[in-house]
Structure formats: C-alpha cells, structure tokens
Length: 429
Picture (cartoon, rainbow, N blue to C red):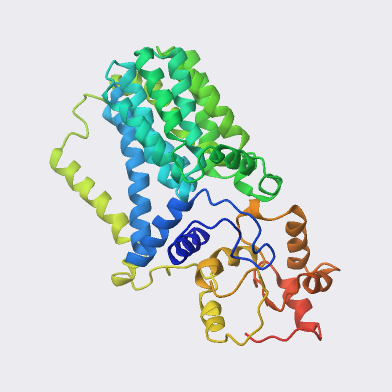
C-alpha cells in the first residue's frame, strides 16, 4: 500500500507520471513503468483527506460493493436468499486474504458488474452490458487485470444464450476502450512484461502456486472439489458457460495465488445453483428467519460493528484497542530518523520495512522496494545475503555504498549480531 501512496505523492508534486525509478539509490533514474498511477493518486488522496480511517472505509466499500454485486448475480440466477447468503459467507471467508488495500482491490466491483451484466444478457436483458466499455476504460487505468473482463466476455460469446451480435459489439468496444489510458497500446506489453518478470516469479509469494495450508486454503480446495462431486450426485441443470468459466478461472486459481480472487465469484455461482434445490426443500420458504424487525436490527448491527472497529475509531471506545500499525512497523524509528537528518544516506532496511519507508521517509532513498519488476535478480540475492549476515555481507554493503542499517529484530537477528560486533558499525538507535 505505502509505495502506491508515495507514487501518488510524486505524481502530485511533479505534475506528471514518472518514467524512471525514484525511490531507491540502487536503481534511481532507471526506466520504470507505473501502471497503477490512478490507484496511487486515489490512495494518496485518501491518506491526505482522512488517514488510514478513510482508507479503511474506502477498502470496505470496494469489498462490500463486490459482494453486493455477487448477491445480485445469485439472485439473477434465481438462487434463494438463504442459499445466496450461505454461499457468500463461505466465499467471503475464503477471500479475506484478497481484501488488502492495493490497486487490484479497486477492480473487484468492476468484475462483479461485468459478471452481473453477462448474466442479465443471458436472460435477454441487455441494458447493463453497454456500460462495460466505460468500465473497461476505468479498469485499464486502475490495474493490469483488465484482461480478466475478456475472460468473461469471450466464453459468453461462444457459449452464452443472449444476443451474440450485441455482446460482440460490446466486446469490441471494450477492447478498444482499454487503449484509452496513459500508456496506450504499450499498456499490454508492460502488463505482460510484469507478469513474465523473473524477479516477480522467483520472489513474490502471491505469484507462487497455492498450497493447501491453513483453514482458508482448506475451504478453497474443499469447495473446488465439492462442486464436481455434488454435480455428479445432484445433477443440477447448469449452462455450459459456467463450466467453461469454472475450468478457466479454476486453472488460473490453481496456477497462482494472486488469481484466486477471480475464481471466487464463479465458485459462488456454481455452489449457489447446486445447493439451491436443497435449501429450497429444507430452509427456503419455511417461514424461518422471516422476522423483519430482527433481520433489520441484525443488518444495522452488522453494518455498525465493522465501522466501530475501524482504525482511528476503535480507540475512542476500546481502551485496549489494537494499534493502527502493527508492533513490527518502524513508526518510532522513522520519526527518530527524521529528527536526525545528519546521519548518512544509502539506507538498507528489512524488506518489509522498506514498503512503509517509501511513504513515511521519502527524504531518504532506499535499497529496494516491493516493486519487484524494477530490480535485477542479483539484487534480491544480495539482499538475502545481507539480511542473513552471510560471509559476504560486509563486502555487499561496501559494494552498494550502504552507510545505514535498519534490520528487523525478528527477521535479521544474525545481521544485528554481526553489525554489533563489527568495528565498522556503530549502534545509534
């Protein structure tokens, strides 16, 4: 999140989108592409206007809009209210890890809108699909995942039941609309270059293949396996288009952690259609959960509870409220550095620290940031050697001209020990 805030700050202060790397001393001035310039401006504006509280509200609105649109998608398929609620709770639990505040979050409502538009088109209600070209313009300027829109539209063209002529025109217009962005046609090349970046593939955890570790992964794989098994036993009547989406988005989700979020809506729709007959038979329409007053009260409480827990608000009523920043965020260390500008430049810090430092300490250039595509593979290896205090750690510090160290007590105890016993280094904080 914080590097995007810094990029937004840079755009505002300079009046243009940067074309070179500007946050580090190791790659300063090297050509760089900032595909996420619009989210960066949005995040910077939110921080300036309302701090992390407003950012949290905005993030919640994005997630809430996404799941609200999925609700309408399920209802469009005639899935009952209780079935829809159950399915959305299940997929919501699986999807919590995708709710982090970053550019991709802003595109979730756009995906939900596109899915709803296609489902209504299936039922010959074409009005909503004409908004997709406008959605494509916004999506292309927010995040490189705009190509996912066409993973919905192209299978619908081939296997859907609506007016193919209208959807074909909308698809062509949407494809053309993605060219309306700062980088023009080069956007696609930059996007594929990032996806194929060796540094991203080698070191970014979200680009690794998912593993069945943890309760959320258990739910994900359980639902994934349950869909074909339940289909074999229950034999629901489901349009072939949904199975094409299931295979396509399922393959994406199994190939890379990052792509799992696009599979969740498809999973929700299929589970809703499969489970709907069971819920109708045993729960829906049985005069259960029908007390309007209690339901409204629960709705208000469910809305107010997360608002009351927002950072910046929870401390006003909760004496032992968790801090806004985790205990491992170097907030006080940054304040101390700001008050000691006489210390030398060329700072090396823990990799996680660097994401916070990009925005919190813009006056100092860093060793690297989490923009993986900006750095060569060797620098990642060198960073690991330094962090682990390997045999060549001091040679690497000299090679990069590093004069200031901010290691993590949790992740770099060996480096702290090595620097403490070295005659070259002096502890100042």
